[in-house]
Length: 117
Image (cartoon, rainbow, N blue to C red; front, top):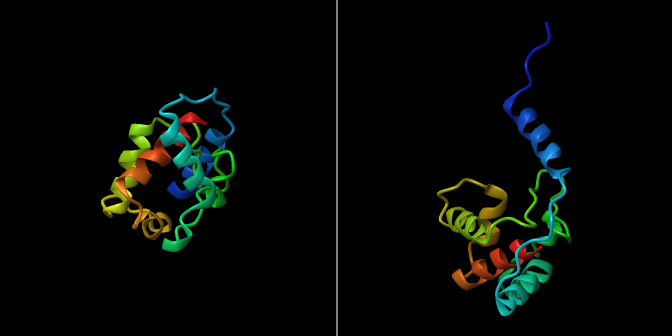
């Protein structure tokens, strides 16, 4: 008898399957917010030691490895998740320190940008 896959293995398989799904062009938003979000996504905030999102989530936001797809996600959802992670109400150790110093405006800009992808 073969033992069932662990929850971690099942999550990884599902993530790999979902990464393979091609999505259409994202929704455009406020051009200034999208532009600010693009800059944050690609460059981070060096003076606050915030790395670029693209380093882990990929340059096109398609996700890579254990890092999920962000491209095309609804901005309200992304903004809410960033807030939950920042306030430690959602446990994502890899992200907690990264989003800790982001402002609400920066998180809204990042959310607008990934929705536009």
